Length: 171
Image (cartoon, rainbow, N blue to C red; front, side):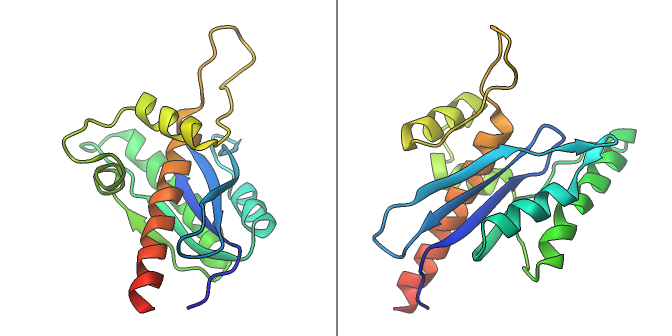
């Protein structure tokens, strides 16, 4: 499999989630940030049109990695989480891509080690150290970095590492 300037997209599907794309030219080449941004909300739900536009903008796409949401015991929020997950998956599938589903414990363990407790701050620091642009949540003085975008970048980075290992294995 020859890989030439393709994107891997990572999606944190929460209501405060993000979407990010990373690029790479192949095994042994640097993984570079393309773009990351918060998921847009429309009428209280994730805007699937925004995800579709993002995917068109960053084609060709080698893979899309989507975090599996954690559901708590039955409550009203689970219904919203399920609807939003469908809003995230729908444009990915419509673009002819079979998404890779990943649990947060899997990507955080692979990226940061199982003994290290992953925190949003750890993810943000990792992204900033790699040169990934993490937007602020607002223009206010007390604004913080958008952890949904940093998680999306981390998920994409995990996905790119998986893809590169697979290519290296096939070689």
